[in-house]
Image (cartoon, rainbow, N blue to C red; front, side, top):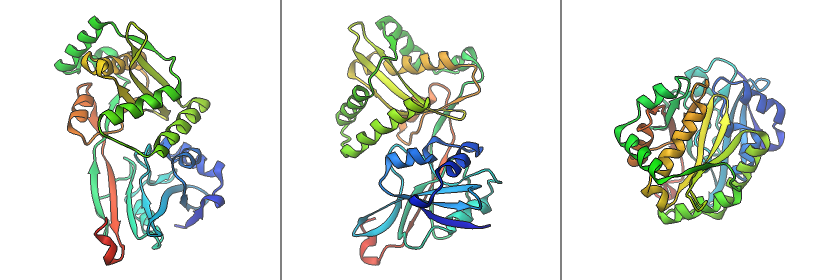
Length: 306
């Protein structure tokens, strides 16, 4: 198969996005507009006339040495193709990654199944998903007892659903929530979040929803992205009041009620953190893993840094 390396300036946007759109394993993260908004540099491997594409997100912040990395707000990339998504094709694309990248640490998408990759460390990562096609009664019957108790608590507390949320306010509340948890991210992350949210809203591929208290204060909110059959939980936050009274439990339950019966599924975007995984599992979500591949070909005097 013919695999070419194209710089961002050489990529034909319509053809690249067409491949991502029609690929059975399509993911919103791989569209050109999405990649343009989450990183400074990316290029792509392309098969034939854009029958297969494989984004390569890179920087040279390690003493000028180029590396491939997984950017924030982009859980999975890897190979997207309208051809047969075989392990042979996946391996061929990974083998085509230029040798100029001395350090590789990237996530393939959950359809890129690989068993063996000489020279790489492969790590399975969890991602919890929940099918919605069964209908609400069948889905809610699988809720954990703890979730049912929290939903009753939230009902007594009296949360109200809302979609009147400004993206700027949402991102600022997410930022404050992460600070409370001790997670301090670079401002660039939140600038990217603004751009992604506005792009998704403009394209009809995302929406904000939340719950508020009787004072009309937001206690929990989620930004959902839509792509193909997925509703992706890109970002969310819960206030202390919300955590004490089951706000996120009732918010996700409201979302399930509104979308049950559709040929869609929820992609919770994680998590390897046990408490978060347990929360998603309480809704009946099951693990749909994806794979991280890692290779360190840095000079010996730099390897210790990675």
